[in-house]
Image 1: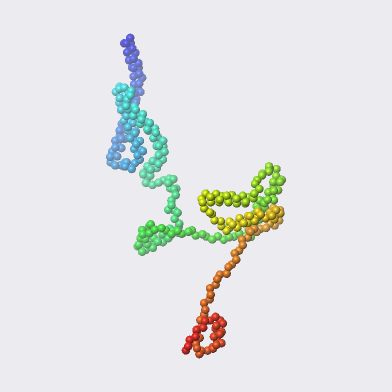
Image 2: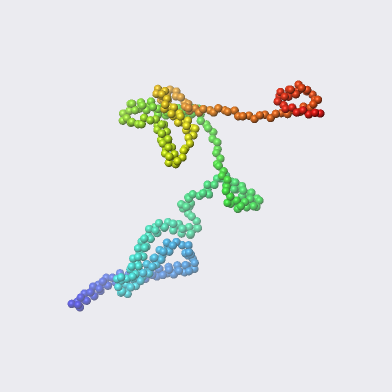
Length: 351
């Protein structure tokens, strides 16, 4: 029974060898050809590296790690093939665990390789050609040096020409000195608006004011089929003013500081209070003549700004004029009185 069992095992083993033999021979032939090709390439690369043709001092550490992992993977794979060809058992072989570990690391490096491919290719191309391509995005990056005004560049050109004539290099001496800011020169533009255009603008402004008036709004609400919208009865200007006052109070309470109110703000609040407190506005309607075909009031400013009164400046006293009177000279008392009346200061000198 044992003999029959051994015969059966040997027979199955021979069948397996016969089925795997053609495939193994083809792989060995292919492996021999690849080994010859790889050996020739490695020998050529080794000669160039030893000759210093490929300086790797400033290379990428990522590529170096990847090359080391691939080399270790090939070494363990060759060791595993050798043991398998010699008929040794591959169960719990140490090379298998190392191959699995290296293969896992290489799979983890694949996303990084895809992300760095563009940068690596660009660096290699730049190293080969020595310049960036025309479509390189780095050519379109912001350049602060281009923000220097043309006037400063013209001044620098003038200075360089003067330096060339005198033979003194002023540029090196003033390299770190701050440059003077020169504002751009504004070209005056002629205001060519005609009187008709001005009246058209004022008429359009009056039309918009009439459309937004309370009369038109009430008529629209009266004859419109839309549902009535109930709003707060407060005036929008008063609502905005109350919001500003509340914001000011919150800021003063939180920052523990008192904000000053300008004269213009005080005047605006006073006018708003006067408008809300006056009763004559009950019978006042907005000007809607721009919608009825009449002549609207085309005043640009409903509340003209009051002109300041001119305060006369305190004039300086005029300096007195001097007149020299010689005793015994012509003119006498009458001439002296005339000079005093004209504002002269008399100085008498005895002859």
